[in-house]
Image (tube, rainbow, N blue to C red):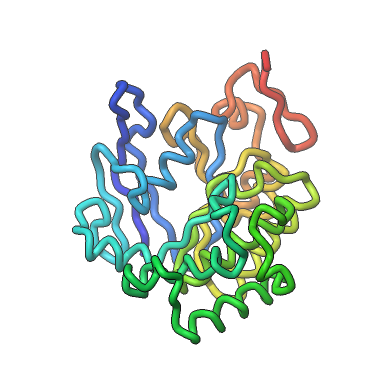
Length: 261
């Protein structure tokens, strides 16, 4: 069981990014967090694995408070929580295989990882991860030679190298065209269903949310303003939509149009 309790994040400049956020995640769910840019989606995901330090509240993983974990305990916890980034976060000049092997850094001695010395088993795992992602033939290319969709598949393969129980995906398809977006989310859905890996993913457009989410959390100005199942978000009313996206937002083909932009 994973639980966020009364989570608040206030940045040094006084910006309140999260305000008393609480929710639970059951094993095997595909939860999508929705909301406009600046609503707190990325901050929430990055607080979960403490890429950003929360100001108040608790994040509980099997009863362990991540927010209070010391370095060694946090390292162990992070092995179980993979992360996928909007801008892929790859080492562009390194080859694809090396980028995927970075997912094993939490399991090997730091000195060996700096020398890119990984056990043969890890290298075999990395190739298997690339095969599953459909890009094994790209293993020895530089990461920056790949298309955006291929780079995101490398990011997913890297996350899977952690052997995670949960994956955090921060706007994983924001920089991809609609066809590639469905391809990447379909791959995450397959991982979720076949390997029972919990997915906690932030997305912007409702058509993608309605297709892939099993449950939805809506944020606005750092607060939870909506909770719903897949069926409930498919029946979302205009009032619920505007509660999340604001009075000026318009629904356009199951997506949204921001007023004044």
